[in-house]
Amino acid sequence: MSMLSGWTTAGHLACPHCAHDHDVYNLSHGGKTTWFDNHRKFLSANHPFRKNKNWFIKGKTVSESAPPIRTGEDVLQEIESLGLMKITELGSDEHNAKIMKTYKCGWKKRTDDYTRYPFSPELFLYTHTKNHDLKTFIDEKSAKLYEKIKSLRAERSRPADGSSTPQSVDENQLFYDAVGGRNNRNKIYGLGSSHDLFYAPSSNTITHFSNSSHPNSQDYEKLQTGLKAMKERMKEMDTMQQRMKDM
Image 1 (cartoon, helix red, strand yellow):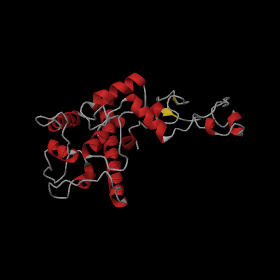
Image 2: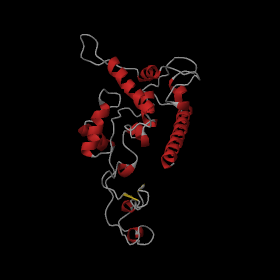
Image 3: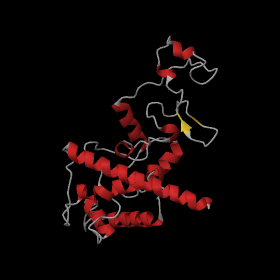
Image 4: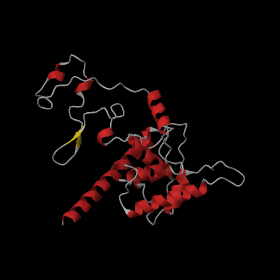
């Protein structure tokens, strides 16, 4: 959801409707973010749970109203006013990071098309940054590869002679060239089991997902399975790193 919408779905700004108008807090032991008891404000004004001091946070009653549910027009207007850039646009990383820091908002990028798969560079960035923040890479190899991707994108999008319009870039081909194609095991680095969704098996053929078409359920399930497997491997790596620190 976060990758497709551009809104962070973790931490204190996980809810796009509440935004800064929330009752989120961090647990005293461990510091984990919790939304416990944030929901009572959404109940009707005379609901008995609002005055219940025992079943939720001890001694607390809730009288405030829920924030208004935002429409699609509201969200689009906010994105327009912030001036966010799409992740495939040159300089978007630095530009969007500055907006997030300045306005302390939950938006981390602009997404204009919600009916397509992520391109392979977008999937790589999502699965190879800590907590999917799109900034902090899990290792040096991932960071270097993404810098190479950005460099190639800048080179290939450079306007042709006599033109001021940047050239369009095939993002999936860009990623394929950046990683150097398939390895000795016929895999493509950084995509896990999802690589066949972007590249035809055992060939250099790029598989494109049309921006105007909806992916079928079989491909969607395959992508979700690949994402789940990659997340599990990332958790294992984090656990191993923590054990090494504790030794």
